[in-house]
Image (cartoon, rainbow, N blue to C red; front, side, top):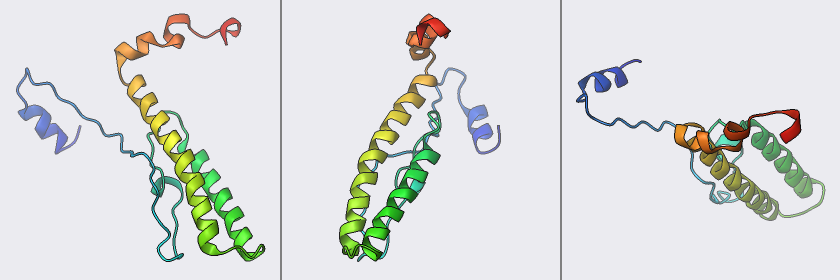
Length: 130
């Protein structure tokens, strides 16, 4: 453990309960398009915890959807505002769901009492129960 965390840990009274949540995330919300000149993708749009391993797949989905949206503008003649807003709506809905479920999973796997209640803990893994 490195400073400043080590110093804080050493300075804390022995009976103190110490909590540390370093799982940065927030549920995705819309962000506008900055006069049609910007949008977001990947962690900029939906930062999520890592326990479900969904960050990269969502970033790839964002890139794919953004390319599709830009093709509709360049080759299909749709207004840039229209395609960016449609892209944003899809990313917000998908990203929000992924962020929330990733966070719930992170909280579950870091809480031993909740882990003991999980189906995998109670039943284990075998070819017969999947």
